[in-house]
Image (tube, rainbow, N blue to C red; front, side):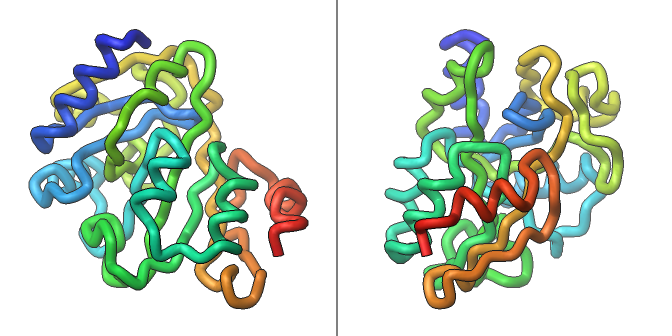
Length: 206
């Protein structure tokens, strides 16, 4: 991954294009969060209903916190304890930010901030968020390599970034929608981070 790759990725997203890119978990598909056309293309490639939510990925935690000023101090502390990392965090979204990623419930938003190191580190320079989902047909296996992505997806995007072989385990999904009030969380899907590690990370933020 090079700075030139990052610049090309940003240009692709800026014009509502669709990119195949590596993350800290699996290969994903990304588009501009407010592009209905981009989201439509992404969902069509995955065979996913538009009613199913996606997530918004920021490439640095400070950018995510700046974009979501409605989050309370306890939730912000929890995000600081969990991210960046291979998690998708479900957050309260009273302002209805990024509605195309929310599905039917605009009061809840999925957030990703990947931990990018080694060959993927240049991607941490991306300044803008993306609407993203894994680069597989809905319900299909998560791709560890570009070659693992089905041909109709690979050749249906505008840009492919090859980051080599990835861990291949999807993100753990953690629900923090009630954390600000109750201090409680729920692990909705266990993936790259065990539930016990999530609980341990949140100790002291309650």
